[in-house]
Amino acid sequence: MSRATTIAWITLLLPGLALAQTPQRPKIYGLAFVRVKASDFQKTSETYRKILGLGTGTNGCVKVKNPCFVVNANQHIELTQAAPGEAGTWLDQIAFRTNNVGGMRAYLLAQGVQVSDILSTPDGMPLVETSDPEGNRIAFVQFPPVDNDAPARFHAGPNQVSSRIFHAGFVVHDLTLMKHFYLDELGFRLYWKGGFKDLPPGAPEKDSDIDWFEIQVPNGWDWVEFMLNIPGNADHQELGVQNHFCLGVPNMEKALDQLHKNGLALDSSFADDKSEIGRDGKWQFDIFDPNLTRIELMEPAPTKDPCCNPYTAGHGRLGAASTRQRRIPTA
Image 1 (cartoon, rainbow, N blue to C red):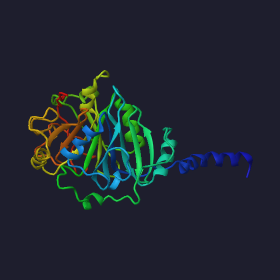
Image 2 (image 1 turned 180 degrees about the vertical axis):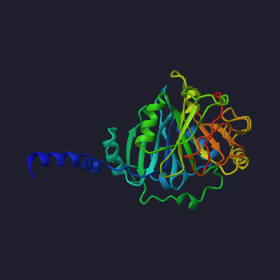
Image 3 (image 1 turned 60 degrees about the vertical axis):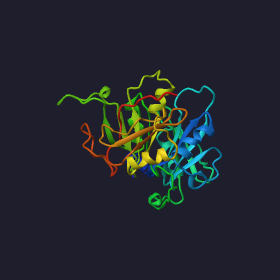
Image 4 (image 1 turned 180 degrees about the horizontal axis):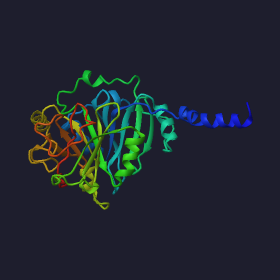
């Protein structure tokens, strides 16, 4: 074989060899934990432990130093100490369950994404940390073994309002950039998008018409909510409304009854006056922790048709995500 022929064969083989060497993206099953900043651990813990009725010290909260609250066998909420006068989002980090932390690290590095070394959670689970293009801190944690049926076997506490984290949401300014990271690189799929106002029939949709853009994990049902058209100078209260997480409840009426039994005052300035049906046709209710981080309660299924034309191709069994006009609580 001539030298020219050899070079030609190598040239033909190189793309295939490069493709074979590109790490495959591991699976992403859903949300593992949400970490929220707090200025006063004792006061904030009251919201999660007493009002929401969440337990501590088991499952993902084992050996966690800061206050930690178990939602189910695969999901929990952690508090982390905020600095005095700290600005910006107080939704500190969200973590996703994956089947291979080492593989996820290799995959992210191959995509040019900066990622930590393999770390360990307090209870010994492997974990890696990174940030999305707008600086939101995310992590990937591997449970041994990944058990998608564990929530069904979880026994909630007697006063527990919810046993499922449905989604987390945060302010997004550059939708195109974030779509590339989450959809193209991580494999999330469009779940729901829309705005607070209906477009006239036949009117073309512009990015400015979209107030929320929601994406579902590639191998499960949880989702991430992009909160759009939020001013860059939004204050702490506004960011607390927008940067939030959502707990699912089977029945809103029963959930509200339990919240009030747990000590939530009927006229609390840290909660909605009443539950409402959102633009997606689902019952929803908001409460806020003492630092004004919003905790959304939501039924999984709509009780009436959604307001607008949802993108349905990516919908999972939970139906569309929920978004409505939010009030800002008074501290």
